[in-house]
Length: 464
Image (tube, rainbow, N blue to C red; front, side, top):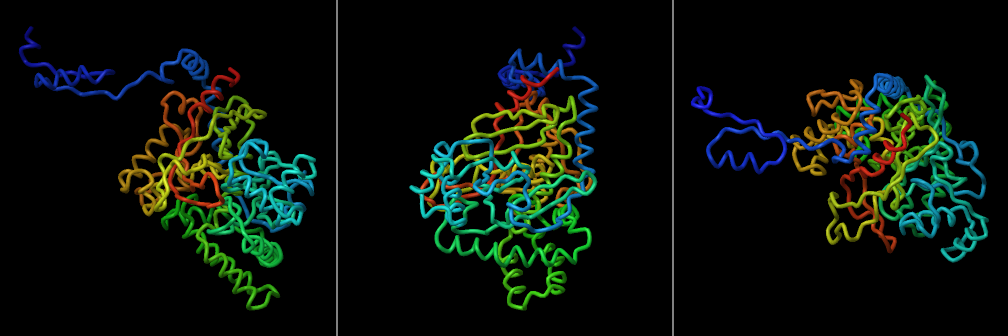
């Protein structure tokens, strides 16, 4: 009774109604933001309990170490057919998990069509559909051959590709050069100018950059540029302006050592400078080789890939090497839209580029890029809060990528399926938004949240 006479202070866990009633009676109360793990689903809670073991933690630490020990180098430029083992001359690669052409979203269908026109295989949609039906043209996901692609992610045999090698581990990955804005197949739109640009990239851009790389010694260290760019306002997914400038600084003296004429060098540098996403291709391959090097450690619950095709979202987990866990892709209801467009106009989240977040960049270090803080609320404080939330679902932090804008707080790395399911916090993915039809292309930009259902399926199927 003596304690009650001195007053009551309450800590309330759970239903906020109790706290409101106490405050109404002028009783001091602290409300604890608590909810049952895994949404209270018994099967998920049981699986989480079974996976809370030291062996899993050790496997996760080893997975993340491989990511952090990776040193991706841009080694070469080749035609896709010459660079990518297993790519057949009648095959077009695409982003996301496997999907039939008729089930693809409209932007990805148009990207495939544009690539087939570029290759000279078809003149339009009707001929493309006939050749697909006859299996004269085949479709495969990028990941089946170790390549990677932004947005629609289309790679066809004669396109020039970035060749990136992970020096410590020896594995490679490939992607096309970024086309820029407007009518571009990576954004699901094309016209005559698009095809002409792709031909110039094949005949001029690729061969010229290949010559330049011969003077680059062991190659161009991609993560070294990323680390510097993060201090200059990039998170290297939605924003790569600083990294693109840093890349130009490295390429210019190399290009000047080649036998390319002045006009060609001017055109190549002008093309790269005119597109702040020029560096994105290097980021994708760098993150892909780092994640692939980390994949396959028994017992690991760390995500080693996230990929989307506008219809489905797929997750790959380190300790389940031969499985993908698929759920419907995320709606684009948190993006910022160009004037005249809304979420109702958008295709689903799309692209292999979520490999960037998989390796602790992009949305996981969104605070590195104050210029895009509007994606998560509009202020640097919001961006910091978003990064802290991402740290809660990751295994470790990476001092190599420590944004100055966040007081050099190390970025999170190693998305843990267990933590995602337990907390219900989904990874943030920085991304563009494509119109769902009509060949319009990009209509906005912002974030998507990975669907929790894919992580739940991974958890339930994971060996214990």
